Image (cartoon, rainbow, N blue to C red; front, side, top):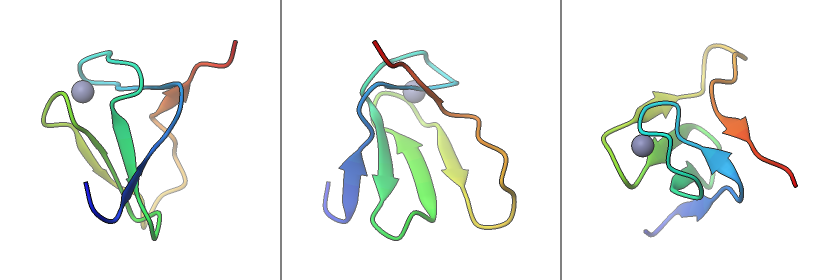
Length: 54
Ligand SMILES: [Zn+2]
């Protein structure tokens, strides 16, 4: 997906898939490639994406 990068270990808050979350290169948009989850990150600092660290 051009212009996006995967977030390693990120869990989709909608479908629960791991490693399916991508972040736009300017950090403005987060979305899931497994479902229709989509989040704009421009106006609030609240993080709904959870990152799993082993
Ligand atoms: Zn998802």
